[in-house]
Image 1: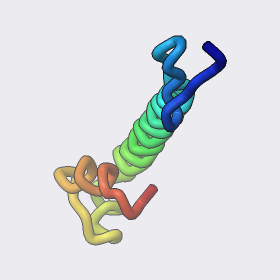
Image 2: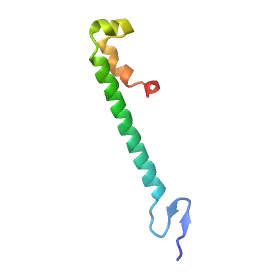
Image 3: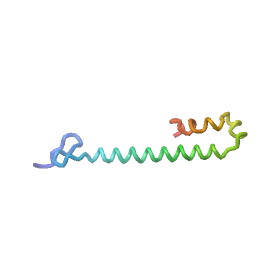
Length: 72
């Protein structure tokens, strides 16, 4: 049988190369987002309490700020 496929699934091998590429992209994006959250958290944690107060935040706010979607 020739290379028959349905959608992106190659029925001769049962593999879906688009699925693998999509998964790798999602993993790469997740790792990038995780690194960015860590960078924001570390930067904010390096500020003094006075500097944080000048920004209108407390140390307890740092994690939620770093995890916000709109900062990425």
